[in-house]
Amino acid sequence: MSKIERRELFFEHIKKIYMQNPNFEVTPDTIYYELSLFNVQDGKQMRISNDNLINIQAQLSNDFRKKDKIKCFSNGYFFAIENRGSYDDKTFYDKMNTSIKLYIACDIKNLYNVTSLVFNYMIDENIITQSKIAKEMRNDVLVVRVSTMEEAEKVSEFVNSLDYNSLISYNPYILSNGKVGMTYDGTLSYNKTLSLLMNSYFNTKKNSNSLDKSTMEDFVNFIKREVLLCINDSEYLHDNYNIDYKKEGDFIKIADVIIGNLDGTLNKANLEGIQVKKGENIGGNYVFYENKEKLLYVIYRLSNYYDIDYVHRLLMDYCKNGNTDIFTRRDLIRDIIVREFSPYELKLTIIDIGDKTLEECISLTKEKYDDDQCVFAISKLLLNKELDGFTRDNGVRNKLGLIVPKEWLGSVVISGLDENSKRMVDIIDNISLENKNIVMKNINRIQKEGLSNVIGEIDDLTKDIIELSKYIYEYYIERMRKEEEKKSGKKY
Image (tube, rainbow, N blue to C red; front, side, top):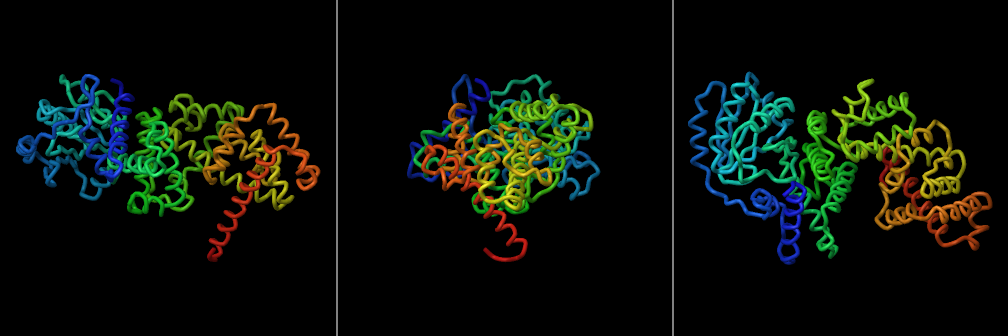
């Protein structure tokens, strides 16, 4: 059974728990527990028997506690071994808090032998690590943290060279490398964050009486929406997921890794890029670790070598398949993409830049012309993805066209809208070319003669688009007003 099929199997398992127990409160801990014991054998879901492993922990402690520079300890559930090298406590834990996390597939039959071999290998290679063995059998029974992707690949290569077969594998929501799963989770837990998001998703479906319509694809889209909400409002993240403000950045990073795992765009290069990213707090309208300028640099540099349509195709292709090889190495473009932008983060940042640039387009167009011109310009954007209704002043119109592919302009417009308005934008996108031409003629007429003079002679679709454009315009105007009042210290 493929990893995608195993992933679907677990998703349907949790969905079934919700549907069969409508009066039972399913918590993130419930999902986390089910995830830790999930396994597939011969195409069938099997619950892992949580056998006691205290004797194996004791054997390992006896083997390694007297080794030079090695620290062994137990927190009551996990037995841990640390190879700190020459690092002091603070430096070592700083490295572990930004480490690559490896899940090594291992069943109870092979656990002691595999763990001993892996620990000794890391000691011999002087690999800085914090590794843990659980006291009960589960699919993440053996976890290894290392400080760099290079060391992660060395450990993975060693594990995959070992001659053993495990009846238990790590959970299917993790990047696979043979017998080793890789992820990043910083100061949080990857599996617990996944459980939090899955719990929030299924509760949302339950509250809207649509559990039966739950799908993996819809779950991915849900996470993307949650990331946007969390980035724009740290209170939302704190209130809905109980995440400490100091750990906001790690939550967003983990969500980004989960998205990449689920949509198939994550690879080791992307994972390393997420791992090495700096910054912790996400703040108000703060976009993912202040990387806007780096993305603008990439796009401007690419536009020196290729026409803008080709640049946009590169960006969209990368967001679809995660292949960084399509980018040139010139001007460090590929290196920046690898280290700074996962596929989802790239699109997220483009949408955010586009949103702020559209706001500027509206502001300058209103200043130069009037409200009606802004509504007209937004109508053209909605209908044909054309920007020529906005002023050219300050180059903002050109910037919007350079940064955002036409195919993504709709995503820019809907980023702050309610669900009904978002659905209306989707409807507009699917209007036939013939009807778009008819509506565009009506809109051009309105622009020339004024809405009040022709309102009785235009069709309902045109009226709906005009009304939606007014709503979008008023949304941006109100947002700008609030931003100004916030800057001046006034309350609203």
